[in-house]
Length: 259
Image 1 (cartoon, rainbow, N blue to C red):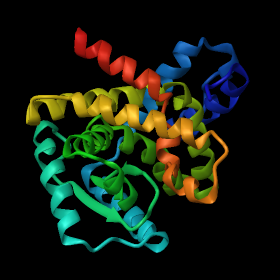
Image 2: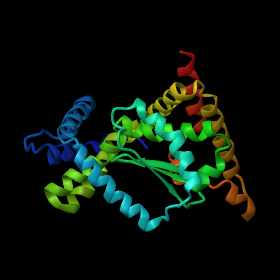
Image 3: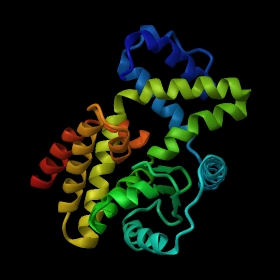
């Protein structure tokens, strides 16, 4: 989904709410570039401090554990730490990363502000090689390092403390309107960061493309009618389904590798 012209009046309201300015002309009278620049300026001025990021991350982690069980498997945890921890050396915002394994059969992984990276047991089973899992961990660390997680949490957090939960919900909608057109770019950027970090650690990124090809096959299977037994084999988590088309991710990784 991409922001449309009809959404800009609401975006203008968000800039007023977040920046504290009361004399901003109607958004419809401004070029889209000016609106984005003003919104970026407002969001940059409200950037979360490291302490706030840790607080939000801890609160989110508590909510996650209310809905999902953490998998207490020492062997699996050692594997994730062994593959993911070396990648954190290549980021400025990865000094305090927490890897958590969830006892969920879906093929899924996601990250959140405060340095939290979640890996489903289903992904551990699906990843054939350490290189494939390393790339997924690198991708999620890329979201943290590039600030995607912090920006996603910042707007609602600030607005809730200024004007209550209603404003927080409105600000969250505004944030999505502002960034919907760039979410795919963030995914591509996280792919590149993860690929490059894996290359520094392991010397090859062939597993990154191989993993994405396997996801592409799984997506095709999931789109076909299946028996109950087959359905479980093609259970891709919502986070993976929200990514850009896998074929395009592969093409972009190959193109940047060539350059």
